[in-house]
Length: 443
Ligand SMILES: Cc1cc2nc3c(=O)[nH]c(=O)nc-3n(C[C@H](O)[C@H](O)[C@H](O)COP(=O)(O)OP(=O)(O)OC[C@H]3O[C@@H](n4cnc5c(N)ncnc54)[C@H](O)[C@@H]3O)c2cc1C
Image (tube, rainbow, N blue to C red; front, top):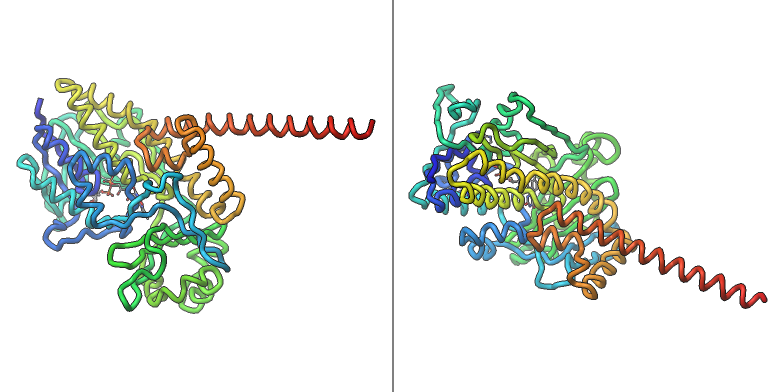
């Protein structure tokens, strides 16, 4: 049954959802806090590029948008690890060389989705309206303009796709038995730039996600199609090597010369970028349930913000869009049933990727530099080659498949337990063999 759906937030998830819902025959109004980005062909906000992988591609395929997006992206089949001294080392993400994550412009992706959604007959978009309250009975959402004037919209269903600091979720938090947690990471992020070389080429290997792992902190760089790189520092807020400690041209120069020496010659605007660009906070949000009364639901970061270390936040939001539209189609006459189905499909998986993203921060910043880690990755790829259906490395399942996140995590844990047991058994057998040989020799 066609519904009138109000989506709060025309970000990545909200725009894709509008497109899906309109194509499924619903009437969609999408209302966004910022100005209309189509007027200036640009969407501001945090993080200039994003890694989109199999889950995002699956969702964009369904909208017929993958080719257009990927034609403007840069493939990253592996990481390039930059030690403090010595040459960078490339580590493939997967045994299969066709597997790659894709660096795309967040702003272009959002514009692509919004343009495609607004091209649908049943989508209306409104801008410069900030959601400030939600009435869960009618349901109605109240929006404020900068001049203080108010506008209200009602609908059959309201979806809060308004990001990690969601106003819709804020209203839900005041309802009975709504579970919510918000945890800030002790690290913030700041973006810097490596421009193209004077001849217009990339200053480093273009087809890689570059990492400078430094124990308690790191810098990464993702390539852009214009041959620049967007670098992101992940530093602690306080203490040794923190944003609080390292500021001012002299300290910043000294720190970069010591910690990221190979990057410094490639960063002519380092000091200006460092002084001008803000430090952003990184938050994990968990919530449950994801709907109230079958009338108001959450999607994307509004329901489950995750830290960016698995490059999955946007990918997971796109999976939410697929799950929500499928649930509405499967339960055409029962909105509450559809939303129960949607959250049953997604909450476990959202919590699993939240955990894995936190774990991957430690892997990226502490472990990628070590020879033992590189050996383990080679071993994982070899095992995958020998037993392709039994052993699939976790990174492959998360980034190159659409196996639900929670299932991927469980499968990887099970396989790792077996590998450890077999390795333990083999070591025990080898020890018994060595002892027997020693006993034989001594008798
Ligand atoms: C540094 C960094 C790097 C990242 N890298 C990756 C990556 O490589 N891969 C990946 O998949 N994900 C990545 N992410 C995560 C990704 O950005 C988010 O998961 C994704 O943007 C979530 O989409 P969303 O639609 O839920 O929210 P958003 O994209 O944040 O959209 C929310 C929209 O709602 C609007 N809004 C907010 N409040 C209101 C209001 N009160 N009323 C009306 N509108 C409102 C906002 O203006 C915005 O347009 C990264 C995040 C960060 C911070």
